[in-house]
Image 1 (cartoon, rainbow, N blue to C red):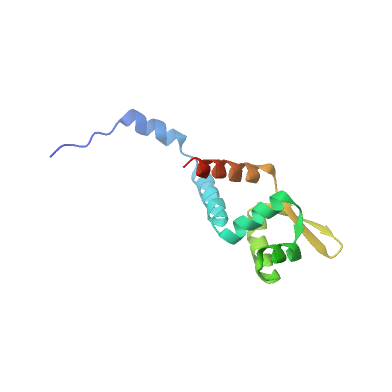
Image 2: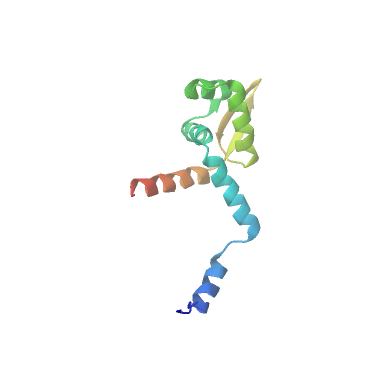
Length: 112
């Protein structure tokens, strides 16, 4: 039976490239959240324009309470931010990094 060969130098180098456990967990959570089609649609929509819950509910044909629930999840991970105008809350992307992440993933898919 052939013995497995481990390239110790490559393993050491790869180990250094790994992120710390906290960062890995945070990244995993972001990808998990964006892995939900409804939340991804919300993120895509608010990347295009600042929208309120009613706008998003109409756009996605789902209830306002369902949108509100998804917005809490997205705000918790700082993927979206909220701006109040009187009683109305408007949502937009928290920063351009989320848009960059989606752009890169979209480009990857188009190259498959």
